[in-house]
Image (cartoon, rainbow, N blue to C red; front, side, top):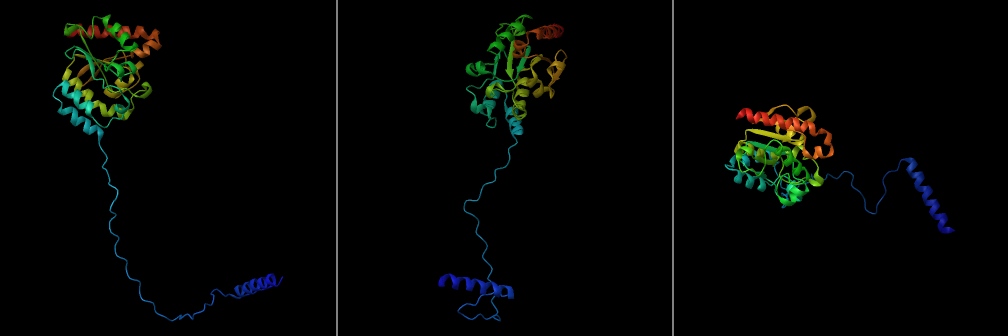
Length: 260
């Protein structure tokens, strides 16, 4: 009881002093309020951290792709430069680099979007169900990737040479990085006509999408006449649209005959 009484009395006395304005406690040693304290010494400058973070400059991937593509003087050199290009993440998830198929000297160059599962497995463009339909489509106007005569041959490639995950469309960054390689590919192959299969190919090389509006009309890629067409994979899903593809194929055939 006495201990509780003493404690309560002390707390009450402390509260009374605070009410009177007391703010400092009294220590055992006296405090000289008039003492002049010396100015604090300036601290020496901190030494540079031994492991300061290194600032990595941002890479202009499109400029690097353009430089690498420009240096390629042949299709073989271009394929090597594109396969070695380090900035496209698609290559990390792909099994094979898919460059081209058919005859490089062909009059007609077909450009699709990117490899699917079968193309990734075999390392060739348009070899799955879409490729089988593509072969039938062009065979109907007398063209084939394995034709002995260059005048009746096809040369086939894609805007990206690695399979996108889950067969998604290539995104805008991937298309921009790969475009210089595709443009150089066209320059080296020098086709008379180009067929652009689907929206990604049109977006990459024409800067336009909307294949329903674009198809059936001639455009130009690097000075070469280009015909947009529905992608064979779309035609497999929408077979009623094959009549439009047939009309476009006849337009390509007529243009080739006109060029002689």
